[in-house]
Amino acid sequence: MIRMIRRFPLIPLAALACARAEPAEHRPEGSVEPVPAARVEEAGVMGLYRAAGSVRAARRVELSTRLMGRVETVRVRAGEAVRAGQVLLTIERGSLTAAERQAQSALDLATSNLRRVERLYADSAAPLVQLEAARAGHAQAEAQVKAVRADLAYADLRAPFAGIVTARLADPGDNAAPGQPLLVVEDRTAREIVVTVPEEVRSALHPGHVVPVEIGAGGRRVAARVTAVVPGADPQSPTIEVRLSAPADLAPGIAAVAELPVSERRTLEVPASALVGRGQLDGVFLFQPDSTLRLRWIRLGRAHEDMFEVLSGLRAGDIVAVDGSKARDGMRARPLLEGAPD
Image (tube, rainbow, N blue to C red; front, side):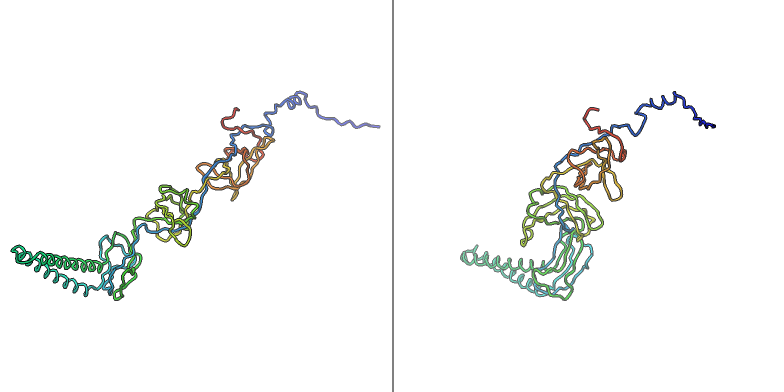
């Protein structure tokens, strides 16, 4: 019988010894790296109340007259810029002009009579009572002239300040009544944002506070200063009117949402640098008990400087990697907390 002998190549013992003696730190899968870390802790932040409102002119006036009469001329159109003191509308003044002439004639007569009685009194030809009656008649006539001229001043409606006509509510030939709005003028250089809030928000609001405001549907955000807190603005509801400064380039009527501070609340926060994004998801690398990093998806709230609120996904005391861009899921690591010994 013939035996077949299979020969195997000889492996040098030195090579085996070297393979067994390779130090553990040369194997990446077993290394544990120190990674800067932060502990998730509770922090006190001011709550926010989103109050809806709108932009309006800081100065707005509805021009009316105290006269009853026919509108004679309207010299401006809606959208037209006007200067302070410019005549915008006139009321027919025929009857007032006649009344002024009549009152002036009565004043001239009373003035002549007063001078005559004063001469007679100086010559002891008229008693004191006659002089006092003449003086009273003169004062009455003078007051009548002033009253008629004051009414004549209301026949011309003038712009109280430089601005723009935003509404023309009358045309020549219309009848004007006392207190009836005829024109609306707004200051185009000053805007304000007006929002309403519940009574319980009032305690945290004071003039001078600067708050963020979202303007319109375009996502524009501006910083606005609280200029006034007006209680009882609407007698039908227990609300507060809050007025805020606004940039002059905002158009009146645009919707605005102000983020107003309310009472302090407790929340968890993580550094913004710890966040990693995957599409619409946000996460952090969380240190595990087995010395590995694992990606944990979280739900974020609002930003506060360089910190973000954590609404869900983490607990107080969790430890996360400070620089999320340098971490990876499954990485062997130990937390290097600020202020802790290496």
